Amino acid sequence: MNHFTPEAEFDPKRFQGSELILPCVSIGNVPQLSCDLIISTLRLDRVGYLTDPNVTPMVGPPAFDHIQPATRNGLTTALEVFQSVDGRLTVVQQRAPALPHRQRALVDNLARFIADGGFQQVVLLSTVDARLRDDKQLVGSPFRYLPTTHAPEALVTRLEVALGVPPLESELTKDYTAWFRRQNQARGGQPRNHRTEEDPAKPEHIDDGDRRSTDDPMVQVIGEYDQLTLRENQTTTTTITTTNLESDPTRGYASITPKIPGGGMARQLHRVCQRDGLPLVVLLEFVAEGDNVPESVLMANCLNGLLDLFSIGTAATGVDGNEVSVPKEWTPPPSWHSFYSTRLPQVLYQ
Image (cartoon, rainbow, N blue to C red; front, side):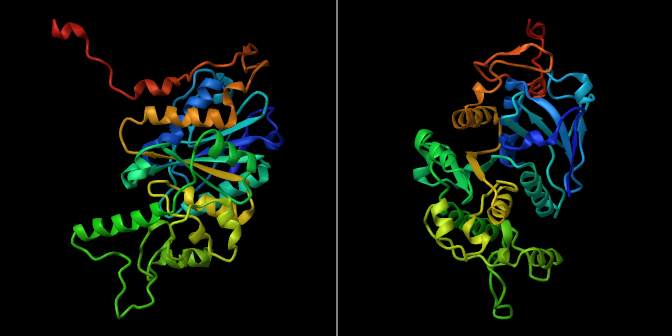
C-alpha cells in the first residue's frame, strides 16, 4: 500500500470533506499540466507526499517557486499532495507512471487513500485518443464525463447542464476495438482476440485492452484479483451515466466501464471506486500527442467552471503570510520554462 508522509504541522484530518483532483498519466500528459496550472496559480501548499512501490521512482528539482524551501526540501517526487489554505481543495500530482504490471496495485492503493481521507468528491482527470472520434464528436465540447453511482448529483448536473459536457459514449469502445483490429491486421497478424477451433473458450477481451493469451501468468493474476474483469459483455451504443450503472447492478465492472484509449489508469480506478462506493467523476478530454499546453488550459478552465477554483483562497493567507488574492488568469510554474528550447541569439543572423 502507499504511505502518506505529511509535512510538519499538517494534520491528515484536513482531508476530510475536501475536494480532490487526481490526474492520470495519459496521452498528452494534459492532466498533469492542468494540475501544474492549478497548483501554481492558486499557490497551493505542499502538505506531503505519497510513497508507492508501484510507481516509477523519480526525483527532480522544485517545480514551483511559491513553496518555501523548508517545506519542499528542494526536491520534486513522483506523488506529491497539495492543498489550499482553506482546506477546500486537495490536488495529488503524479509525475511518473506505474511500473509494468503494477498499475492495478497502484489503483487499489489510490482508492484506499481516497477512502481513508474522507474526501467529499473526487475529480479524476484523464484524456482520450482524439484519433478515435467520430463525425459528431468533432464538433461541440472536447470533454466527456464518466461518473460512479456515488458521484454527487450536483457535480454531474453542473457538468452536463452548466458546462455542456456530455457523458462518455460507449460507441468509442466499439470504434477502438475495430481500429485495434485493423492496425493489427495491417502488421500482418490476426486480431489478438481471434478465436480458433482449438481454443474456442478464449475470451474476446482482456482488461483494459491487454489482449494476452490465457496462458500468460499476468492473466492468471488478474483473474485472481477480480474475475469480473475477465467477462466483458458486448458493448452497446448507449451513453454511460449513473442511471445506466444503477439499472443493472449484476453486470461486471468491466462491462459498465468502457475502455478509455490512452486514458491510463482512469478505467481501472473508476471501476474500483464504483465497487467501493466512492464519489468519483472522471473528466476526459480528446487530445493528441504534441504541444498540449492549449489543451491543459482548456481542462483547467473546465475545472474552474466545475469547482469555482478562482474563488479558493479569498481572504486567506499563504505560506509567506501575505494575503492571497483571487487570480485572474492561469500562472504557469517555472518548470514549464524548459518546455521549448531557448531561442537562438538574433546576432547570429546579422
